Length: 157
Length: 206
Image 1 (cartoon, rainbow over the protein chains, first blue to last red):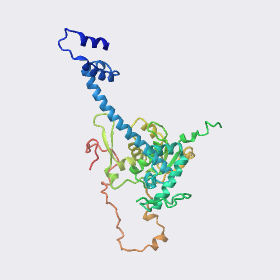
Image 2: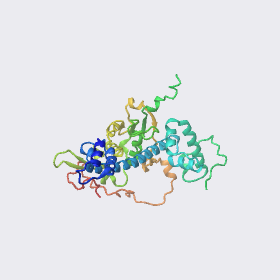
Image 3: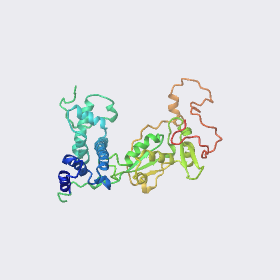
Image 4: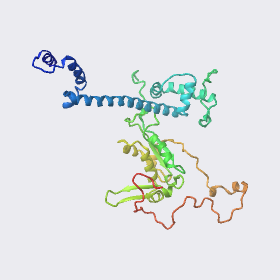
């Protein structure tokens, strides 16, 4: 298809305006991206370019929304895992951060669902570490669980 | 047990039955707590499409406590889809008609607005007092901690404790502390829906 079009652009002497191959390839790039659209949005360039621009805008929005949704879901899962241990998300986060344990919400959410004992060990450590700093109203959760040895690892200035 | 099934934990997907005592609790604060257990957000395996919610049994819903003057100011809208049938029922009127509806509506509004909302509401069991059918009571394995401590009424304080309290003021016999601070409407008014559309659509009356 495109070869014959190319040839007609190049070698048709009766054509008054010969746009040349550059325009053809430029349009073909767009039409390849719009190949899965429906109707004339698929093959007619002037309609396809409009639809494609809007589709790319939607794609950008979708990428951002996906990040936000996953972040919300993982935060929710870590929070529920922390509440099962008896504290809350803020204690978990601050306790790990102040000990420079750089686990993101993705890792923590995976641990809370599929490795509950690992998550419990991390949570008990975070609770003890946060309680040893004497910040906030940590006493409302009661005493932190025993069996955690901090060895002076508590304060981050 | 084969080594492949060693990590299967079917009890993860079991539905737990929770108990919540609604005595002297704010239903609009408690509804978010109850909704968390109903929709499964209290579990680390939560996903919005994952139907992993629990059952919640709410008792003492007739002793619910609304904040401020909400009993006389909060209106519940209903439309029977016929012309001229829009009604605004005040909270205390709704409570006199059915003493479980305030809790039910509060939880219904607190849940996510999607197609899972009505199946989730089927797992909420509300009882006006502490009498639960034994078939339901046998399932309960957990109690949700109430958000607020239940205050003690003056009439419920025993005589011995009341004697020991120092009397700071000599109040007259007919003095009632906090008797009519919230502006209760006239007492002869009956509990019936209000026909006058004084409330604009979607907003609370001020």
